[in-house]
Length: 526
Image (cartoon, rainbow, N blue to C red):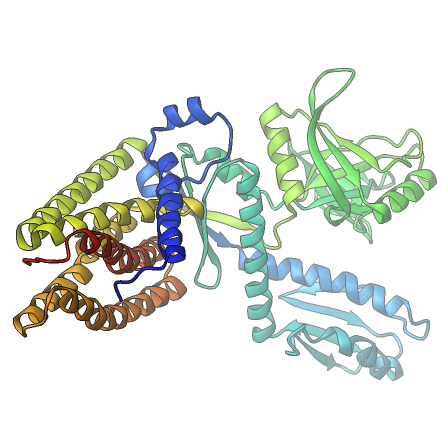
């Protein structure tokens, strides 16, 4: 038990040295770290919102708007599907009261319509997403089922969470907390971001990009009343003036490969430069060739940004959005377009800002608690166990540095509950040494010699130590899996602390005791 092979000694010291060195960047002040290492990426512990300060947003999906958009999408799908069959002749598809309805001019073709639409009425999970009804022999009505709506909202919120994550990553911030809350909410915490205004504007953009042809034949007077010809719709510019465009989009955001903030070469005004994929390039080239001389509208989130005229065919797959942008707003729109459109509109329900001063105060108090806990534990061990207390103290200090090193290696985030877990780990770290030392004393009282007492003390106590800490790891794992935010931060620190404390309290102290016994094996008073 006390015999350490050379490979084991080497491995133990190597692990300790590596993780202690990994803790150094996190212990250095930011100014010192930047002056010494510059922009070199280092393994550091990131501070959470409650410690570094930052912004908090609670976003809620607009489920009513989502269901309306879902109806509009289904209308387009139904129209495209039924037009493929020359046997089917239907009237205009309308949306009223959450229903999609259309007239089949030949009542004998209703069953044909049913067969054509049946594959579209179920979702990917095999659930019936739409109900198919026939009224008055020829009126087909499609309504959304509750199961279909719930499943669609769940998927949309999951996708929206990933889009939000990509957009925040584009801002250059580190370690944001982005989690689902309930069925239709997302909690966003961004450390280090003092003003949530920019974040609100970025996350509030659905970023649904569309290019649509302008209907130049529409009556302007009717457009002012919101009336558009069949196949067209009335949208508005940013100043509120109306414009009539075709319902069918030429280009959508799904066809983008790049979106970057740029400048107009003639005026120097900020713009957004777009690059289309292969399908988008071919389609844009064909449409601009067929409609040269006509205007088309560039639409973002149902608002017309501009409506330039097609002077010549655009065949290179490049397009530019201009329209009174600032550099910041153009960059935000580019980020939103690059990260993909939100499948559901998000509304800010709550927001708050944690000041860096409050975070600094939490850090100072947490550091004070950690130092005080460490000092009291060290004093107790030195007074109670003398030399073995010194070994336990060294192991405790190494354990603290190793925890920081492991967290830095994974760029983990330290929150206020994480500091609580850190302090708890310090207090519990010497439990193993107390068990070992008391067991050694017990073996000595039984009449065993020095070597036998230490041998049996470590051997017998290690079983209880491992059993007790396995249950703690299981509890921490459960908190990590089912918890969120600060709870997960606490679980991470606790788990790392348990693993490193067992290593330092059992393996490292045994290595130090073994080295000492090789020099003075005769006497031992514990």
